Each structure stands twice: as structure tokens, then as C-alpha cells.
Amino acid sequence: MLEDKFGRRFHYLRLSITDVCNFSCEYCLPNGYQCDTPRDFLRLDEIRKIAKAFANLGTSKIRITGGEPSLRKDLPEIIQACASTPGIEHVAMTCNGYKLPEQISSWVDAGLTSLNVSIDSLDPRMFAAITGHDKLETIMQGIEKALELGIKVKVNAVLMRHFNQNELDSFLDWIKEKPVTLRFIELMQTGDNKLFFDQNHTSGLPIKERLLDNGWQQIEQNKTAGPAQEFTHSDYKGNIGLIMPYSKDFCATCNRLRISALGKLHLCLFSEQGLDVRQFLLDNSEQRLQDELVSLLADKKSTHFLHDGYTGATKHLAMLGG
Image (cartoon, rainbow, N blue to C red):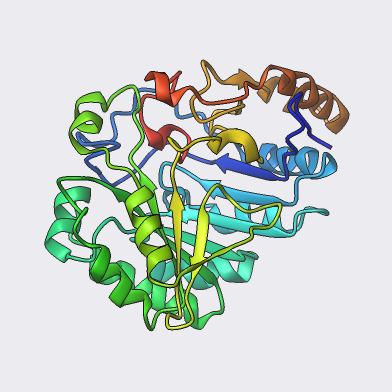
């Protein structure tokens, strides 16, 4: 079992398969993808070995991330490789949704069990202003198709003071009849976005207080759940989630590790550096990789130090998919 010195157990792997993204979101890649890293991304056989090693160490959930994972032509094969690994019970993915209508069926056939889609505004004009693409209608069509196929869908919205802070009522109206979990994520500071962060960061606590005042009930999360506090209401088909990385004790329940598209282990989204484990994929000895993962976990810190303005090696969220 992967367990750190603080007693936290890691059932959940976030696996990046590319750092390329075709959107230019204001808080992440406002100038678009710059191709500033080698594009020698993990191959399918390497992904199989990583999935097996983590599964052998107690991981039961893999989330495929980017950049934008749907830019890889072998995405269905990657999903299938993770889903067919003994011990892996859930294969999720986070994407921007622009290829959802045409590709969701192939992802589900490959073994995808849940899907997170980024939608920072329900206003088509604001969505285009944030992402650089007029694709909201296409993404919404893809979500409908995913729901029809029985996929569990979550929608991620990054809270930004000058962009979508006043859209809570619109989002609530949407989930009244839509069985999705809408997750508001506090804007996080990264190496490249300090000015934007200073201008746009806003806390999720007022939303939590409003929900509780209006009859929403907090749900107890399972061992493979992400960091969101989730709430439900009998009058709504959808749920609300809040991810508040600046809240007290946010890191106390950390249960996830990250592998970058270049084969580096990141003990935290804001680690000082990625730790190269790709060299342990060269042979067929899963034990060597497992031993290295256990050894490196000893260096995991108790917190991300975001409160101190520390962003580590994370220049932008596309590097690791958040």
C-alpha cells in the first residue's frame, strides 16, 4: 500500500498523457500552448506498466488528464490499458470536451467510467472569452451524449472574480434538472499567472455558506474521491462540489499522486520538481518501479504551501492536468 509518513494512503493516480492543449484559458494558457517541453510523451506500453505498478500498490482509480488528453489519437487504447489492469476499478478522465460528441462512445467502449468536463461559464460569450473558443454548444451536446451512455459526469468551473463570480444562480438553475456534479474550483496561483491570480482569486466559502443556508447537505466521500466537498439537495437532480485549496487542512485528506506525460512522479501539484521514474519502465520488472515509488513517497510534504505563495515547478495547470 502506498502510504506516506503522515498516514495518508494513495488510492488515486492522476496520469497525464500530454501537456498539449488546444484551448487558451485565461488562467492557464492565455497565450496558447507554447511547446516548451520535449514532446516525448509516455507510450502505451509504458502506461500499462505504470498502471500495473500502482495497482499492485493499492491504487484503484486512475484519472487520465492532459493538457487535453483527447489530442492523443491512441486515447481509446490508453483507456483500455488502464481499465483492463487488475485492481483498477475506476478509469476517469478530465477534458475540455470539444471532441465529446464524436468520441465519447469510443471512450466508453474502452472502459471509461466517469468524465470531468471544464466549463467555466454557461454564457457562450463569456465561455469564448475565457477559453478562446466558441465551443460551449458542442460541449453541452457531448455531455448529453455522455449521460445517455450512462457515464457519471462532473463539470469543473474555476471561480474568477471578473469572469464568472456572478453566475452561481445560472449554474444552480442548470443542475436543477441535470444529473451532473458541478464543481467550483478556487483559482490557484501558478508560476505564470500571479497577476491574474491577484486580480481574480475569490474564496469558495461564501458559496458553501449559501448552500448550507438553503438546505444543501454535505455528502461523505469515499476513499478514491477527489478533494471536493460535495453537497446534495432533494430539489435538484445535480450536486454541487467545492474545491478550496486555500481552506484549512485541505491537504490532510490527500489521496492522490501524479505522473506527468514525461514519466515524472509529482508528489504534489506544487512539488519543487518531478521525480523521474521513466528509467524504471525500461525492463519488465514492475517490482523495481514499485520499490522506487514507495521510496520516493517518503519525501511527500504535509501541505502544498500555497498559502505562502509557493507554486513549485508548476508553471501552468496544463503541465499536469490540475
